[in-house]
Length: 583
Image 1 (cartoon, rainbow, N blue to C red):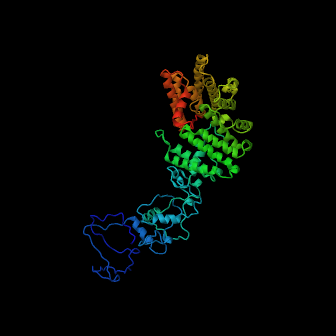
Image 2: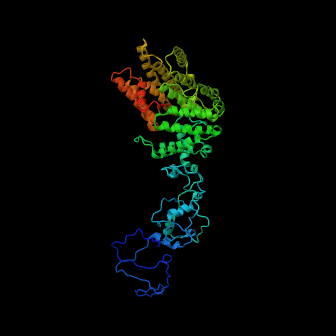
């Protein structure tokens, strides 16, 4: 069946056209020259040599111009030397006759239009050699997908070196100079082939490294545990997909859409599958610490999507990983692992406080971190906004919250409460001897941030470790109400334009659930909505939803209803295997 270049034209309701034999596309016939000025008569002759050309003149109708892509037929001669398509009866094209792309072309085209049927996809398959992308594709992996932002932010658009090279041996005698022919040839430029997935998604990875990795922590620093590391990601497919999932979520998320973007879910599923496969390796004890990068990235992704998750299961998995790698004796000497474990300790304490259960990680892990924290260029405050003087009693209270009915626990809690009351921020944020106004403002914000955590812990002690049948019950409720006001006053005093304030979600949850003041309730609501709009972490809206449920019960006359009752009711519907994380 001969190739045709007229499949887009309709033959219906059209007058007869000029018929002529086009050189190079005839059905095996030999074209004979026609003397100028002579027109052969119309007759049926079995001999091709004697068969004249047929001309039909249409009165009053100018000759119809050919489409631009018809010219392309003259540049390609059919031959049977290279089979493309493999279908019987279809003319094949010689690979070496495809036109070369000039080096100065900077236009990338997508799927072709008006192309020859049954040849384009096969030709592109030959052009992309197996050695171009050496990595093995994981089943159902979105590696071959073109993210909405991926190609638009790549820096390759103006770089001729990144175009896919033609098949070795391709030659061309001349490049057509007409503009119409040049535009026709541009339609045959293939998509870019990248050597690795890291190169393909480099724009998204750079965006994560410069912006999104700063979201979870108070201040950015050199040992940011969330920062993307090229040397790790180039050899770690699970980390790469985890980072792409986070970036896709922040880039494509919509406040009106509850579910994450499809691209984020695809990359997340791929990252989890690859990560679980890496955990099953027999030599995990040799390079297991490198998996902590993916552990933190997946936790950040889960916390972004939902505050309710199997957090304790994730913590148990992280603990087992650290133990397989040698325990505290091994990771405590690694500066990067040290800050990563500190982040896991923070999550463990927050989940335990909200759930009122003991921490998963042993207390020896916290002691190992404390030995090195003062000698490193970061502090617990730089990570989470809570200084070590308050983070240590926070972890202690979390471990005691599950067994608060013994006399020994009461004595320990009394000592912890005393240490929290005696904590004072150095200088109380009143450094007025500086000439830098912004530095003084930041120092004051730090003071209010630390005070917010301090009063939140005092409220937690009164709520959790004071029995409901105590004779001082009314006095306890009065103190909780007052401390809630002080706590929220400190949170509101921290500038809303400062990123430090976003770290105070746990104090807002503890104090906001206890307050009866309409003004403070409105502030807590505005706080959650504002930071959710800015960063998209679903936990902000979950905290607001829980507080509103508690307020509704209290306003209805159920004065004894508190945030623990609401969280327990929600967990009962989902199952005890899930927990909340509000930090």
